[in-house]
Length: 152
Image 1: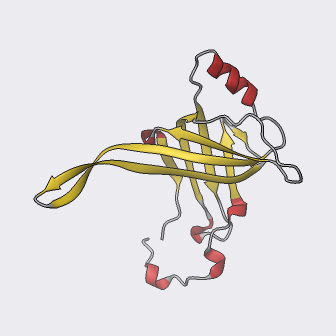
Image 2: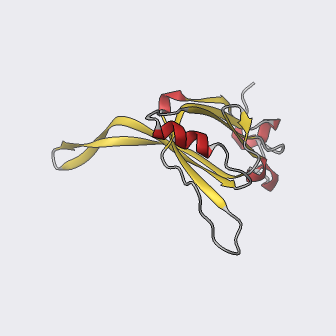
């Protein structure tokens, strides 16, 4: 049965909280997750029509960032050794935001396969501060699939 969005009352408790977000790398839960972002950007070329500039999508770019509160090295050494050996290691990310107050009692979950690291920040710190590391990654957009979504 389809829901009518005009009949659903908007309440503050329906807003999603990042506290319920989880990320898995190759099946392993990243318990020290601080933040996660995954996006797809449309790459466009200009198309001139008369005196107007329009555009045409020519490709898609997938990219994201995982931010962790460092507890251990999270396999950075293995990844570094693979890179040094000339390999291009790939991994799978599953991410979910399953807030118990979400409409319908479920949340959003997606899987991104064929992911790669764009940068490997091996060690950094600032005295007097907890260490957080941003891990930028890329992904082919065709390898991103929603497993479930929140719909009206």
